[in-house]
Image (tube, rainbow, N blue to C red):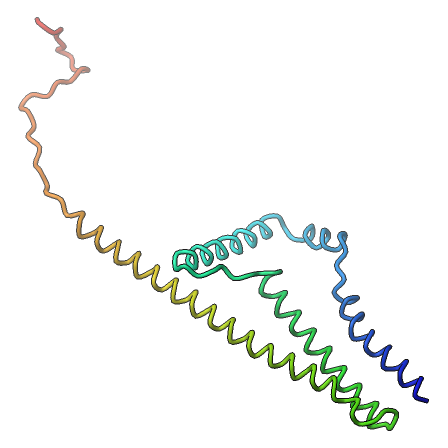
Length: 186
C-alpha cells in the first residue's frame, strides 16, 4: 500500500510540473500563426505603443539614475507565471490534504506543500512591494520630468518677449515687372 502512495505522490508532483508546461507550450508555428492573424497596422500600432512606452520609462529612470527594470517577458508574462505557480501549489496542497484525509498517507505529508505555498506567498508579497516601489519611483520620475519641462517652457516663454522694431519702408519700391522699367544708369 505504501508503494502505491509513493507512486501516486510521484505522479502528482510530475503532474504539477508537466501540466503547466504542456498548457503553455508555444511552438514556432503557433507563435507565427498568432502574429499572422493580426492585421499589420494593428501589430505596428501595438509595437509602436509598447516601444515608446518602454523607451520613455527607461529614459526617465536613466535620467533619475535608477536602474532599468528587468523584463523577462513583459509584465503580463510575469503575472501569468505567478498565477500558474500559485494555482499549481494550491492544487498540490489540496491533493495532499485529500490523500491524507482519505487515510492513504500520514498527516505530516501535508507539511511540504504548505511550506511551499507559504514561501511562495511570502515571495509574492515581497515582489508586489518591489513592483509598487518601482512604479512609484517611475511615477515620481515622470512627474519630475514634467515639472522640469513645464519650468523650461515657462522660462522660454518669458525669454521670448522681444522688442518689436518698426521697419522703415522707402517711398518708392523697385518692381522688376513694372511697365516703365529702366536699366541701371539710364
